[in-house]
Image (cartoon, rainbow, N blue to C red; front, side):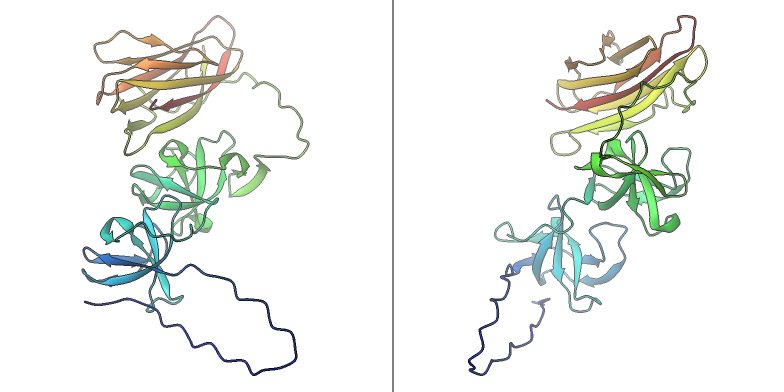
Amino acid sequence: MLVVTSTLPLSPTANPSDTPLPPAPTVTVAPAVGTTSTQVNVRTEPSTVGAVLGVIPSNTNIEIIGKDVAGNWWLINYPPAPEGKGWVTAEFIATTTTPDVPVIGEGVSAVIQQQLNVRSGPGTSFNSLGTLNAKDVVSLTGKDSGGAWLQIDFAAGPDGKGWVNAAFVQATGVDSLPIVAEGNVVVGTGTPTNAPTLSAPVAAPAPNDGDSPSAPAVKVTLSATGTKSFQYSSDVSSPVGDAEDWIQFTPSTGAVLIELKCEGSGSYVAEVSVEGGAPQSLVCGKIILIPTVPNAAHAIRFQSAPTGDLQYTRYTVFVSLP
């Protein structure tokens, strides 16, 4: 059986003296032992887009020294790497007990919930730079002004950055991320000091985002073992601008919680439906338990209701399993 391990240098023995003893060394967590169940790639980061440092054969013992925020990846001692360590997928590592190792990158990372494109800017109209897979870990560096798109470290992107839809990312601390504008310029922060009270959104035609009942803005599958919740933000306007948005989700359960938050002065119609069923109304400012059909596609429609003058509404919808 092969063993991937690191060799620590011997500590020198100090000669007796009358000088005070140095502070005790910092206690480090002992590596946990794991065994590869198949051939695995060792990567520079806990993501399938990370560069491959090498390959470890099946049935090889390894030393685990850290993990990502979700526990989907292990950081291991890997002497062939320039820094002597690398990342492997936890799914293919067998351990006798759950390794008691520290989280690496906590507070600045997020976990991808399902396969999605990384784009050159905050929107589906921007070019795709590559693809991330479920359980990949990304480092967050910013967000757009609405919080619907998150900027990440992405080597293939302009200035080493890329953008992902926040609906497909499990993250905490998003409110504290800086707001990033075109050209990767930081224009604000999510937690400004002594910030003035923001006024209500100014009525203006909402840009057309090209979604429709057959091509919704997002499609999300919700399950207890995968993505459990998501949020989506956008705006609508009438009689000019984008008057209607469509969002699709497929739950694994018989009910979901839906919360709708709205800003603006426009009248609107919001409802959720499944093919063959009657639409159920949603109300801004309320959390509603909506009965659903397990494993069936459900559509959320948010429509600006024309009443003469320009109507504008900015909204955020939160959908989660109960």
